[in-house]
Image: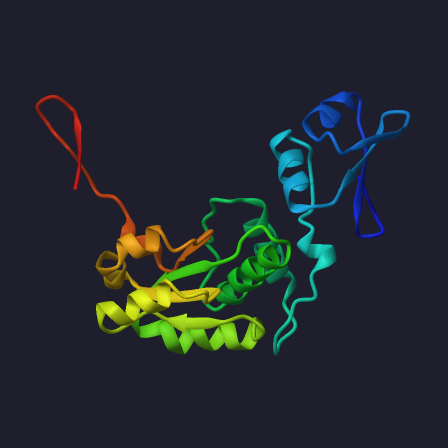
Length: 210
């Protein structure tokens, strides 16, 4: 696989038709060679077709804004998050997961794939971690914290703010507004708060969700 001018991927395949069928905008340019636009949607399709080592376009098209230069593992994490619409990040504490998630979301916004992101996190880090890091790594984006009285939370959620931060308990208070708030992306920090617990009924072996 070869990256062409940071805009296309040149693939050499035994069966080019597999790609041109799945991605109609791709072109056969030589013997068993296919040129594919290097975009988020195209890269995801290629991965779904089990094409190996398809890079995220964030690695070639993104300027990584902010106060600090990202480490390679942060670029790898952001790349992974842009390629997987549903994903878990199990990086160790202190490895810059927050920045990676912000960069991934910002890139998807620049590509027009999402418009708004909801960040659900513990009350204690809404301002000190998430808002601070958003100001550090995506200072060009609008950010607000949906906290306080229900009316205040609703106003923020129903605004055009690009990144909205809310605590776990606040979600239940304004869940209907969130559902209709036009959020294309939800980031859950410390997702163990939402883990499902299962118990086994010893008599018939069935499971009940708590």
